[in-house]
Image (tube, rainbow, N blue to C red):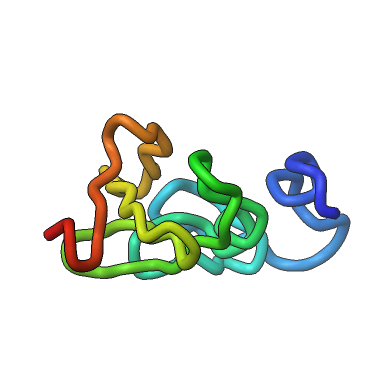
Length: 91
């Protein structure tokens, strides 16, 4: 399992490229503005499922329970109360 410090600390050697949220290792920022390495370790707070990125509107959707979490200015809002259900009962 990756630790948060492994993701956010710069690599010992190599280029740092400025991303939308500032310098990111390798400059890898997803289309929603969330750093790829951070997205890889994030889980749905409701069920622990993996998250899939959506572009319009920027969001992260749980592949297990279907809750969609908004991403505001590259910052994911991972609050169950702020999430929208998807599927037959949701938008």
